[in-house]
Length: 631
Image (tube, rainbow, N blue to C red; front, side, top):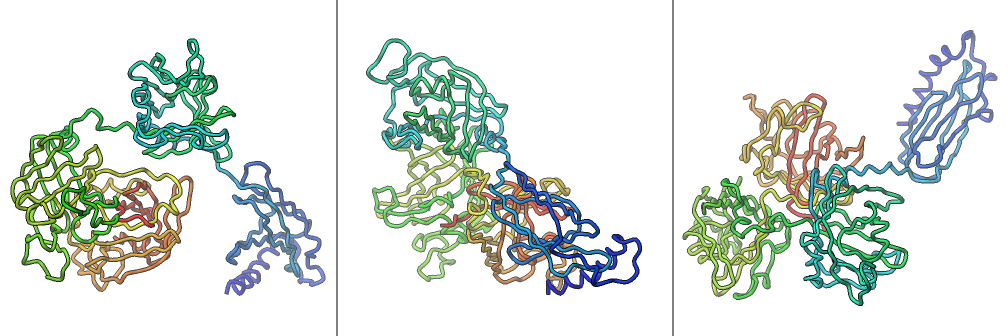
């Protein structure tokens, strides 16, 4: 079909072109056709780091027809005499060239090949990395003292770990672990030794000589930093006499240039190499809960309190084991394993005044053990745990210390998400195994079995993902209705929330929140309409019109599970997910989006994905959370 269309195009275009290329047109003369052998073109591959290739047609007395064919057989034709095209990948390419005049199109064509020697590498823009380093304004990092290998050394040219590495907390008491590195978005950097001292290698000359590494007085300093990239190697450079903590050798002070081995929102690995030895440092963000009491970590410092949800993406977020153990030895849930059971939408709110609220979420149910004795009228007696409808519940809590352990205690019949046994409902008293600003693990032990439940701060996002979207998007997603603006709409070109945005759980019961989106790393995409078997569509979408009640409201359309494909493309620095026509991505906002489903990735984190679809008249915003990562 493509060839037929092209031949028809040639027939239509030639008389028109003949008029424009020849003033005195009488009758076509086959003997006057241009010769393919005489076609003369110039193709200039711009040297260096460029994606441009220049094309020029030099044959006098006729007009050109350039035919470019891609790897899938798709053809693009142009009749320009000179133009520039973009080629980002190194390789050998070819173009077919024909010529025509008033007598017609040349018989045959000339195939011209050209070679691009190197891939095009876009100029490095440090903005994204500065954002991670500074969190958009200011961010403080500390040495990862509890991680083995947080400081290490090795052979020059390596990753600085093959000769020696410190065990966790091995350097306690050396004035190393209290150092603070603060990066600001304006390019300034502050090193604060905190205690006024710094840890120095025995071979670094300060005063006299030493046979062991030693502590030396050091003042707080504020300087600038610059980021660069060369041959895919990113570096951070400071002015002379600037440190990031431990000083290994003189070169680290005279030329403080560090290779960035890892940079995520939760980890920074730097390597400094003087040609004889490479030193490796691992930093993590300063714990925002450092200096807070456990009650402050639990309930926050604001009167409105702090919200927690099950850490659904963490392995063993729900587990059980032998009494007296950590509650994980017998069974533990995989990440996302309990999706669809009414447990991941539970919200626990602790307030500083001792008020506690349990919200069962959009499903309005609590998940209970088959032997819990709770809501037995809802037990299907099939040997499985089950869901029980419950109302939002407000109670109290106390945090007490018994010996060296802390416990969270609630009044009888208070719900704390999953109910594992009768005792946890009758006398809910949980051991506080651990708590930080982001995560909390509780343990309840009735003398026969110990259950462990791990929660995370409700607005915890995990690491931001800024590259590698094609593979890092892999996983299973659904709506996060607990967040205001999880779905919204707004002006085209905007963030899709300035005209309207949904309040938390506003769209419960319309067949929206049970939709499941699955992305596989191989490019396969699956839409599952969930337990309701419907997709929610805009009243003007034109989708499933036979189900439109014509009452002026959006409506539900019964659909089957759908398997399709997806691709991720970059356009002007933004990334887009593209689907085939008619692919469901949950809510269908309009006919244009359904006909050409294309969604801009606003942000992607370990746990969340924000998308915008914009048809030029209206932008819609979707906020999903990842229930399960791909293996």
